[in-house]
Image 1 (tube, rainbow, N blue to C red):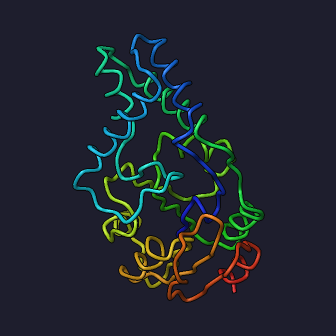
Image 2 (cartoon, one colour):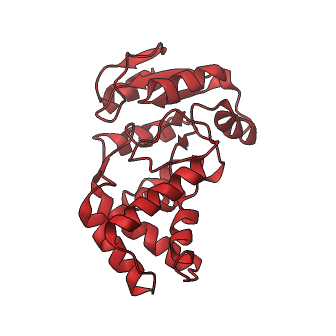
Length: 239
């Protein structure tokens, strides 16, 4: 059982454009000797992100995924370096945590997420996470929601410089864990990234339409849930 995370198990809303975020982040950088005006910091941040993304593959950069293919640590560190400040790993992680906290409106599990994963594990299923995500954000969020122990392994795109729907990202998991695609299913809320990407490597698929699903026609999956219902998903996966 291979799961997407945001929009499938976790509901989240972020906004990287809000003024308060950049005011707080500018204060943070200033406190360590890196002087920025809030809007100048915002513009430079997005410029560095675009530089990091240059030449990368991927259909989307959804805000809740926070530019998943790159490593945002490099961006936060570069913002210090451009002002002559050397930032160690702890400071970069602290900065990323502040950024995520002030850009997030809410973070919560969909109803029944833990019950679903518990039932799968109880029935002897291996459960993997394959997510377009930044480790510096997602690792903390999984712990905050007490979700990280439910998976046999966690694969995040920022660690591998590729993301769904790139077949390479799927194959990293399949090859490392010696998973026969004929014995596995991908569950996700994104028709292009989760479903079409999984089908290209021979996985069965279950599409679940959530509030974070892109506006697109339902994909051609083996099962389609037109609305978020993890109890029904449990019955499908164990049926």
